[in-house]
Amino acid sequence: MEQNTQPTIQVTASGKVVVTNAKDILLLDSEGNSIAKRNRFSLCNCGKTQDIPFCDGAHKD
Ligand code: FES
Image (cartoon, rainbow, N blue to C red; front, side, top):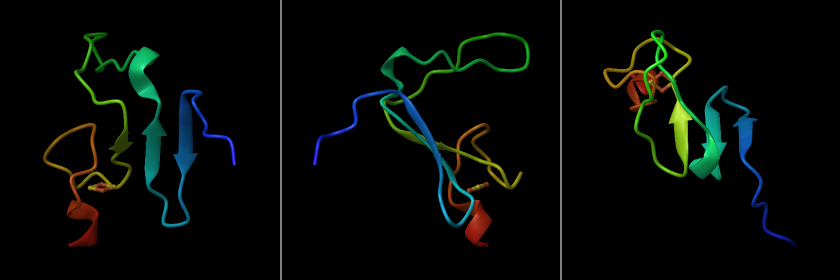
């Protein structure tokens, strides 16, 4: 199987939003400021995170 190297946003079965190969993706806050990120990260879509905009696992609580 060929490894995916394209920037990808995947919504998992549980609703988690996983971003991979994010090196060239610009992640901005509501004011247009760049947010530091890793090459792979998950975005929070439940509103419980203490690390906006990233998922910190608080959705499990
Ligand atoms: S989706 Fe919100 S903390 Fe994980």
